[in-house]
Length: 181
Image 1 (tube, rainbow, N blue to C red):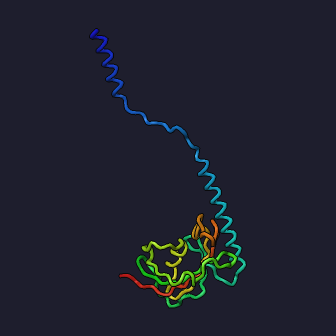
Image 2: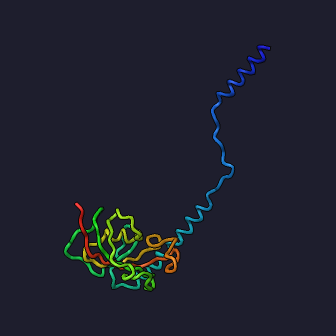
Image 3: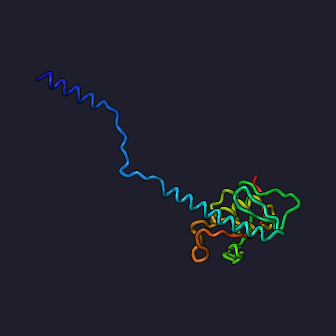
């Protein structure tokens, strides 16, 4: 009887020393939703860039510049004195408007008023494109930007003004730059 108890006890101890096994998911996804989303977004970006390219080609008198950040712009008023651009922590004062690619005003300069922004520090409701565009500008310059929707209002748009995934143009006038030390 003692031998049987000893054998059972040894099996229990050996089984208890077994390392735990990872639990498997009840349901496994193949990732097809994400793959479809990526493909859909690539097509959307291509279509928006084609619209913007058509606008650029239709206006050969303007010298459009392609930014490293994924948008296009041209100068309406350019600083020729070489004043430095705004850097991290600098406070800028500017005005801007937003229009669709057909020129229909969505948000006017009057509606926006004069804006104050601390470069890369202010948690302000500015679209990504304008935040990045301000870093390219010098005091006194006026620049028109062409933004694909992912640099503008993206998937959300503006309620009652602009729908989702709409590329826009914006004319920004940089009034002043207050440099930080």
